[in-house]
Length: 261
Image (cartoon, rainbow, N blue to C red):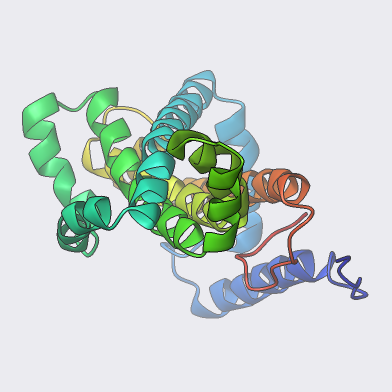
């Protein structure tokens, strides 16, 4: 089913961002507070960060942690969620554990993980993994649970084993829901990445932000916030482009997070 094009939908997110910058500029000029620079001052500080070799190394380190944590979470969480969706025994075993872990802010685990693993990449990557895993497990579970039994019966009648039915029937049918969970996990990966780097201030985008805050360089603080936001927008747009190609056959989803694609 082809979705109808709504005039102005592609430009709307950019207009919203422009409107936010205008409101920010007006508010900063009205308040005249040194800790709240104008939007123009923050934008002018962005090239200063991007021209700094050390800052770029820190940002790339953040991207590396985020990529590893996100990828490992997908590899672990999708099969687990699918098995929970198709097996009551597996769901009964993991549901209580997930219900306990889900409400806990993943950044709150950072001090404990730091005690166990130190303040290096491993502890930060683990926090990102935990932040991504739960929504991916949930959506994979819901996608697998919604697969029609008739499709599985047909696969069994054709001689497919349980593992083959999982890969050839359940996975493709649940893919739209899985990708929804992955997209949510991508946003959470960015949030937990920055939060973990603020707590374990060794390197990364969060470290740059807090160092600028300590030095009272508020234009750099807000410039870094803009850069992190731009990273999120670009990653979301690329993922949505990939999602649209992978599940082109499925119904269009209009209730997804903001996309600039």
